[in-house]
Each structure stands twice: as C-alpha cells, then as structure tokens.
Length: 461
Image (cartoon, rainbow, N blue to C red):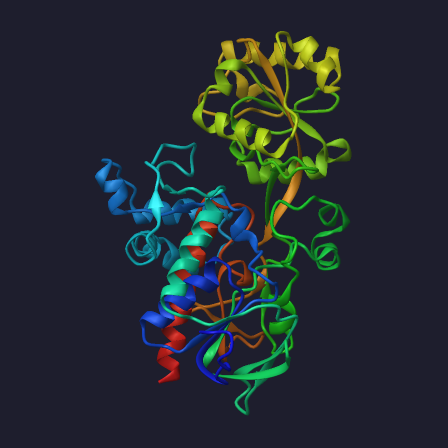
C-alpha cells in the first residue's frame, strides 16, 4: 500500500508483530481472502527470527522422502513430549507434529524457501531438521526475507513504530480491535475476525524475567532480540488470559560480548569451567548446557574444549566461522597445557580433566564420569591442535505466555476462550517446557500462525 494512502480502519485480522508467526499468519490470511494488517513496534522488524539459525523441524516431508529418510509423525510427537518432560500440552504438541510437514511444504511452495540437504544430527533432532538456505546468514534472516517478499507480493500493509498498543474489548468480553499509538497519532483499528499476538516473548524484559525465574536468569546475556519485552503478557493479562510455563525458557551457549553462537558444538568435545573442571553432561542439548552454565559456573563463564578432528566436523566448522565473522576469540595450541595458559583456564586441572576423560573414552566408561558423558559416541581429545571456545549461558526466548488451544485461541483463567484473541510463536504458551527439539520453535510458529489466520478469517465471515 502506498505511503500516501490512508490506512483503512477495519480488517478481518490484525496481527501484532512481524516475526515468523506474524508473517506466516498474514500470508495465510491474505491467501484465504482476508483483509489483514501487521502492526510492528520497531522501525523495522527486529525480533528473534533475525537471530535464529533457520532450522525448521518436521516429520514426513517430501524432502526427507527424496533423500530416503523416514521420520514418522508419531515418533516426532513422542520425542517432543519427552524433551518437554511430558509437561508440554499433548494436544498442542500433536497438532504441531501432524502439521509440521505441511508447514515445510507451505514454506517451499507458497513462500519460496530453499533448503539445504538434510543431514543427520544428534538425537532427538535426528533427520528432522530442514535448514533454510540462501544468501543471508543466519538462516533465520533469510527466512525473514523470504516471508517479507511473500507479504510484499500480496500488498499486505505493515505499520511500523507502533510504540503503544491497547486491545479493545467488546460487550461479550472478547476482543474487537486495537488502539495503536503511532505517527501521526492514535489510531483505532477494528478486527472483525480477531487480533493475533505474534509479539514474541519477554526474555528481554529483565524485570519480568527476574519475577518469574529469578535474578540469576535476569543476568544472562541475550542470545536473541533485545526488543521482545513481554507485550504478549501485558496485553493479554488484562483480559484474564491464563499464563503458563512462565519460568521456562530457551537458551544456550553464547559469546556474550559479540553474540557469536557455538550451539551444537557443545556435543563435540568437553565443557569446562574457568578452573578446568567438567560440570555438565556433554550429551545434553545446547539449551540445557546453556542453562546449567548460567547456574553452576562461576561468573557464567565456560569453554568448549575440542581437538582438530572435532574441528573438521561440518557443524563445528560452521560454528568456528560464526566466531570468526563476529570477531570472537577461539584459543588454540598444540598441547592442552599451553591451551589452558593461552585461554586463562586452570592448567593442572584442565590437564587432569582431559586425561581422565580420554581414559574413560578408551575404556568405554564415560557414563561413570562425574558428571557422566552420555553421548553415544564420545570423542577423545587427542589430535592437535586443541581449541578452546569461550561461552556463557544466554537466554534466547521464553516458553511462557497466554495458553492457547489447538485453534490458537487464547484461553482465560476460567478455562474459556477469549473471543477474538489469538497467539502464535513465542507469544503463546503451552507447547514448550524444559527443552525442545532444534527447529521446533520456527516450525510451531508457522503451524500456529497459519491456524490462527484460518480461524480468524472464518470468524470474520
């Protein structure tokens, strides 16, 4: 829509936030014939999608089939429930698992997303991760570009710099629209079908994180956007939304000053404190390693210790490139002792730790280490050069928010639907708890963003 044209005041669907869930919702709504607008609080979209690796987890896709990979929906569902400690909502989890393949196909056919060949990853990711590819990096930035290109083709209006929002209620205790504070002033927009919260979570709101998780969590560096400050909570709470999983979050390793992200490299060597001691099970997901680092290591400061053979792994090589692009340090030397001196790690303790670890690998008794290393194929640290990647435990996104049902409708504390209010992506609560399978957040944002669009468009009729 040209800038000089006045924006209409009535829409079938109003979407708050131009991230993965919001853009997917807008595209789906437009293709269903809905009249839709996106309201974004920043001058340009700055949410978590721009920081994401671009992994979309799914089971039963034609891309998997073309490579001879069999990943069935039921196994995907069971693994999603297992990593959430059986505390993720089973109905939401099943909807995500069942619709995950369609989300990948939709991104391919409707949005034009290109994918890298699927490679096997450590369980529970296995061969489920579909990696967005293209000229932009990380992959989340490319996905954002692809989604924006699709919205531009449909001429979907986007109003930026909306610095203050209010949901407008109706006589039936539902939502009838939005009051937005933006240039040139206050604007009221009516939503015939509903309003979708796609604002992300609240990880960048230190006060809110401290309230729900504790001071230790509020001091973690950000791995994601600095603008996700909890509008999903403040906007929905006043209408009686039931908030769930508010103490849960997605995090992982991060180099605090530069934001370089080693992620899965934690599974290719050992993780040690600045004193040189192992403190986590390297078989854990990077999410759990990041959380434990923030809680258990002095000053939230640790290192991944790798040898040259591990460095040559494609995933690790990519993480080394991330550090190089960001100007983050990676220390290296021909001996463990000299590596420790160079990186500022306790020399005698690190030598003792690496020796004990290598002996356990050779004896196939890494499960007896304290803490144990539960990797199926742990890698010895024997091939020079040796490398030390510094990192801290950082916070990426919160898992908590207004609870939604399988139609993406927000549920109240009285266990009733709040008419006309939807949530998707990190703005919604109920799907994730404790941990997640890599790529499932972007996948779920697509699934529930599209579901919200379909339901709201039907309601508008």
